[in-house]
Length: 398
Image (cartoon, rainbow, N blue to C red; front, side, top):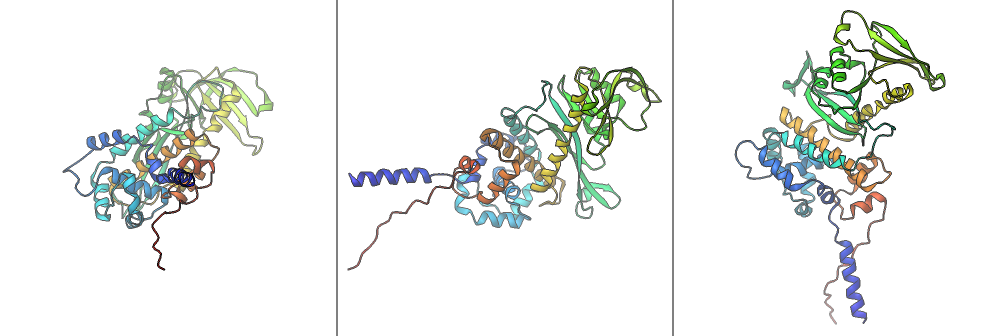
């Protein structure tokens, strides 16, 4: 009876201990069959002999999650975990092979993979906090500075290089639904015009996107916009509405643009004035939405700050400011893999329904990346299982 209890207890301990590494559990969120299909579609040149695109992804994702600073650092970190690479579906890679694949194999694989992961996140993402049912997007762009002598292909100014990250942030889950990477010279409005926004959606942006022709195009497509009015804008007031000054509102008007470019946007616009009670600053918003309350329009523009927080987060927590390669393809590969990692973290947060922030989740992963413990238990704060004793034959000499 006692022996049977010991066997049952041993089996139970072994079952508890049969956790894969935290990293392996995270990578299971990547649809592997779809990854391999994309890898075959986005392959260039002869067949890879010493490594695979999956091994490249594992290595570069390790760099993102563990904060590695060089290719040598990445390879050394993986070498220390050789016995755990099998469960990642990866093999040990050399520094030269990883550098060559980063430079030569198209980054478009990870651009497409980000689209797959985004669709996966959207099924779990919470809705924005407003009462209206329209989709809400914030538009902005962030410049990533590069050293021109090291990255000569990224010429931005006379002595400066840069690439620019253009993002349309969906407020349902704060997901980068529209994302493109261009050279530093590309104007924000140029990238915005290429967006295919859904009908009845609301897009909010700052004054850098002022383009009367584009405003008119958005209106003709039944897309609402909210932006700030430029100080030198010419207009005439055609109607005034009552407001509640207790909400910080100072005016709610219907206006018609005047001046030399007024013919590019002949539609009536709504102009809303708002005074910040804390700073005393006055703001004037333009929109083509006449149904929502004026206070809601002001709150929508205030929510645009979320895209600033998005850029701040990825620059502080992921590797998109210092690069492990110097070619354009290597830089784009690293940025797109960073976006893929962000989407994996977002999916973890949505699926686990925990109150931890994205940064807290990332810190937990960094500290436990190659530990064998349950990923969900790690996120919710369960203590790790005690180590299982190793039963072995003991020789006794009398």
